[in-house]
Length: 382
Image (cartoon, rainbow, N blue to C red; front, side, top):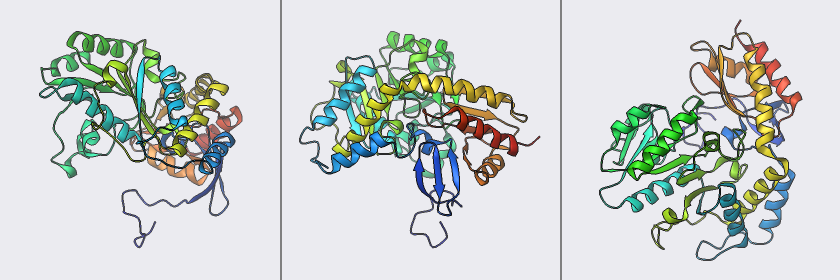
């Protein structure tokens, strides 16, 4: 984009324009090939142009495109049932268009469930929950708040993985705790089982909702269907997006039935959420992921990638779970490394000034992992 671009300047101008993708590969307008180890920020977990998804969307657009949520569609109900099954059953789903909207649904549901005067949601510093005004305030990154003050009230932030700080922040106005199993945008910071189990205990004791943001971690990326499953707990509310549509805009908010039942007709809505094209894509994604055992694929590929990263000179440490990883470099090195990797055909991103995030498709091959590691080895400072 240039100064005369018709697009608002909300992103740094990119030197690369992608025109085609297949699996883990991308091609730019000049015909250069790249390995996509970012997946559109954790979205294309089945890779680009997956035939099952392409065929599903093409068939759906020839059948039924949109009828609004005043009417039911078969495909939407089917996807909701599949998500409920994967989440352990006993819940209900609201479909949205994005992760931020899924979190908005969760926040409204918590407020309705808590009742007037019991509306505060606690989240963690370093978290990321969206860019609407409410989800921006839920995001525990104060620097992102300042330009948009005053933000909606009802949000409180505490130190990440600190149970004492969480307990100290609870008062009678608190209704819920909102956490990511791995803080993706905050630097790929995994939680621990002890922390999530402690949060679950506190929520049970204080009658708070435990809401888990699985927008980046959900649907196999961490080596389990959902990141919270590594920690031996069950949430009250789970939000999803990104991988659910593999590029088609769709988000979802799942809640236990007794919580979901707090909503009545008119409390929440959406024009496009759960419309047939998006849910047809989601149905194809979920069917393919189950057939491929995507969580097991991600776990195995993640082990190979993590071992390879740890062996690279210049990598100080590796953190993350499954195929959501960060390679920690020296301070200030991540952006130059990411830029040089792009020139050599590898798409990754600098999630902090010292950390490079890697989130390739869950079906990435061993050869593709080895090729990406070779590119990083060539660009990392010695």
